[in-house]
Length: 302
Image (cartoon, rainbow, N blue to C red; front, top):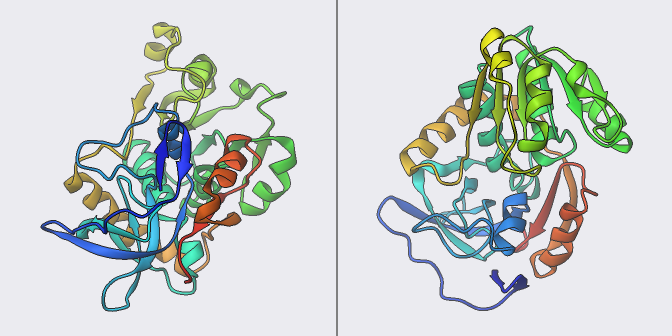
């Protein structure tokens, strides 16, 4: 599926040809990420060499019938996608291909930012913004599985479900002042609009990890607070990382996170499933923040 002048068009294109070190995946399902919406708007073009089509993750089958899921730089909104071998993950035992389609992007994003960058440790407190998103619902469960205390921001109507996922404290970002909390790590999808309050919310030695810019790219920052509290501010992205870095993250996720999925400590949160031909409707649901968890596009019969 290609974005054409802001519209989504489902049309026939040539099958991808796997390059050296790549395998071909027959796609069963993919999931909608906010990056897909930005790409449609022309604000987030794919990195060099990536497919022009949307889709940062998928589930499906290899040539021999093995069921897998995969982290992608693009191309998941299609019947076939060529994937570097290091970005392939086995479908977790006990999960469907629809559920598996929701996992690669969020699992790799959450692990790389909470563990690799944020160094979240058992007994610490983490503040997760956008708790009702795909990233948020996964991050809440992962942080709890690590033994952390979890505070999340989300619309009040989503609080009950997020409490079931393990959130210890919930704030409505429209009404509540999250800067009053004390967190060791903040996982932020908003960016500029939240920068000052995030710094206030961090304890001494805290780590702010910015993974999204929904609230703008620019903000003023009191460096005195940063210095006096010995804070670390990091910004990361996953899509544009080199293949070798993605492979290392995928390997760590398989080793450290996949067991949590297979024993039930983390479970996929599927909001709704649409046929891929109705991707525009799926995008509308995500754009309206009406979803809780991941919105899935079924590409072929699992």
